[in-house]
Amino acid sequence: MRISEAASRSGLKVDTIRFYEAEGLIPNVTRGPDGQRRFSSENVDWLTLLYWLRKTGMPMKVMQRFAALYAQGDETIPDRKDILLDHSRLLAKRREALDRCEEILARKLKIYEKYLR
Amino acid sequence: MRISEAASRSGLKVDTIRFYEAEGLIPNVTRGPDGQRRFSSENVDWLTLLYWLRKTGMPMKVMQRFAALYAQGDETIPDRKDILLDHSRLLAKRREALDRCEEILARKLKIYEKYLR
DNA sequence: TTCTTGACCTTGAGTAACTCTAGGCGGGTA
DNA sequence: TACCCGCCTAGAGTTACTCAAGGTCAAGAA
Image (cartoon, rainbow over all chains, first blue to last red; front, top):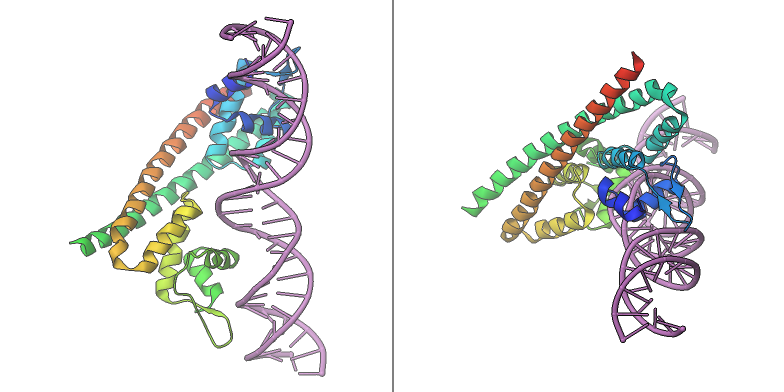
């Protein structure tokens, strides 16, 4: 498939996919005879994973390392596993931050209510 | 108190506080006779609120509007309440993203496990 | 057949929100 | 006196996009 379909399936924008490719984050993107990118479903799965990792705060540098490992094949799975476990810990921290902020909002809103009545 | 104490109390970095002040996000910051900033505990409470709002994804532009309303006094409380309610909805979306990503990580890690045994 | 439209391409500039560096001032300590 | 420390400003650098300009090519309308 072409880039726009890969975009709508993965969640990433067309521009972002091109940018990610230039940054070496997408292994094995081929080109058709027209010079346009062609994405396999494996590519799209990969892009979807990147979409969620990025959306939840994984830095580009880590994604680059992750992509490089992915490109090297199955013997890098232990390293990739470590990266995802680290990210899982980051998710936990983010959830804590959301909870803490929610608390603060609730307290603030309560104070506003008092002023409004 | 001075900027470094305001920083360690609010969670923000010194540089970020100066940046926020330049962007008009911090009403009523005074200066001592030495030309250095002095922060009241009200300032620090405000900075702490900004810290959590920003950390959980509120854009600067919204924070600017929020700060402008805050500076105008109590009659802007309904507007400020709306901003915080909007932000609360954003938090819910972020939590969904975290959950979804966690799922994806779990699935991926399971696949890795299969390869590793 | 020519014209237009639309999806794709590249390169390079612009943006958001910091973050850091360079260079300078003034107060306290060895 | 010399030095260090925390503060100051202005401006450059960083991250991760995002958009704009200008160009190719194929397919359908006039």
